[in-house]
Amino acid sequence: MPASAARSRRRTPGQIARGVRRRARRAAGRLRRSWRGSLQFRVVTSTLVLSMTVVVVLGVFLMQSITKSVLQGALQSAREETQANVATASGYLVPPPPDLTDAMPGGTEGEAGDPVGKAAQALVDRSGGRYDIVTFNESKVGQRRATGGIDPASVPEALRAKVLRSDGLVEQPTKLRYVGDRQPVSGIVIGARINGTYEIYHLFPLGEVDTTLLAVQRMLILAGVVLVLLLAGIASLVTRQVVTPVRLARQAAERLAAGRLEERLKVRGEDDLARLAASFNEMASNLTLKIHQLEELSQVQRQFVSDVSHELRTPLTTVRMAADLLYESREDFDPAAARSAELMQNQLERFESMLADLLEISRHDAGAATLDLEPADMRDVVLRAVGDSEALAERQATRFELRLPSEPCVAEVDSRRVERILRNLLFNAIEHGEGREIVVTLGADRDAVAVAVRDHGVGLKPGEETMVFDRFWRADPSRARTIGGTGLGLAISREDAVLHGGWLQAWGSPGEGSQFRLSLPRVAGAPLRGSPLPLVPPEVEMRRSWRGHGTPVLSPAAGAISEVGVGARETADAGGFDDS
Image 1: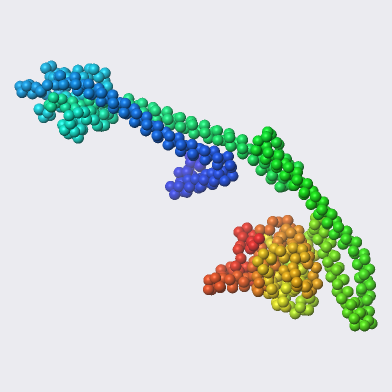
Image 2: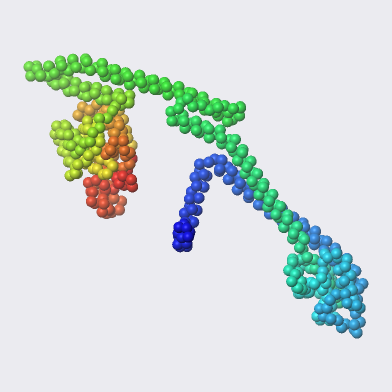
């Protein structure tokens, strides 16, 4: 026995049902995707459903009309023939004398000397097999005659009661049954009284009518199916004429968006689609022209910034030498001149820093920035950045709290650029932290490392968490830079983070301070799917949970890493926090 057959035999009914449900869900999913993704499929399906509805309604109406017309014709013909037969039978069926009332109950038709048999046989002979006859004699209970093997019980008792109470024809649809193995058929029974003594019933089978109606029904169904398929085909062809140019326009737009600015559509004819193609080509030409103009302008601007920055270095070096000489001799000057020398020294340092930042920005804009990657312990990088910021923190009466893991956090990074990112984050936290404690947290998982810098200062308003990385942006334009920043530090830091394939994100809330999180992949070039640290500080999430539920709810995992992961959303791939 094949293995597949053995496996199929071992499957339980529950497994088979689950397999059927899975296949049904997959088929439904493919159908939904086709419905959402294909205009032609939607149009053809809608046309098919609507045409099927119209065809079914029309078919039912036509079938009812045809059935009614055919049955009415058959019934009218049966009435006329019965009326004529009743008039003929009146001459045969006269009340019998008393000595001739003995007859065979249920006997056969056409017996000698029997007026009932003679009348029935005469009528049957002229019928051509279109009907059978059943007669009853009221003068003798149980006396009845039937022709053609028809069962007299085919005449309903309710119909006989109506005939006895009526002087005209009485009709009723019924099932005609026969003596022997012949199958019952549908038919019509029409009865009447003759000479006040006899009941005569004409039984008309409707087998031919049913056959005709069945043939008509099959023809209507076949014609409806063919019509629906033709309508679906016509809808598909018509839709294709519209969808194909639209699909070509979509593909051209996608290629244009991908940077292939030479993409154009072919213009055929003078209809609306042709005008659409011409408008698209004109739009693409104008867009290409504008993009080239903007590229040239951007190139000129970048080149101007780079040239000015380079040209300023030579005079700045000379001014710097003169300023250093004056600064070193400031004790020999009067107080006003000494103060001027100190101010000039400070501003020159800021000018040099701004010039260096402008050069760095110009390299990023030109795509000339490169990484000098090497494995580095991120703990050492954080300690060096904190050490460079300690002097400034002491002047601002700010203290650092470091939360570093006990094990090495090695990642392939450009240490110089990462240190500059952290210094910029620390300087920003010192400037806006209002002298309060700054918390620096380092976290790592299998795929990524992250550093979070948390201050407890003024915080950020909603929407400012993305604007804070814009060049020369200030939350409060009227506020002066207390530590002499250039306004480019965070913009350069974001460019350096992107150059590493990482994230630099910010969170802030008025009155609760702010937190900046740098997330980097541990292996250069690897995609970053999550961060080992939350973007929102854990204590903030705890307070929000307390306000919302009355008591803080912490999972066991969150409690185990209380400095790292409370209240953030974990990713399944990286096992970290995906706040991007």
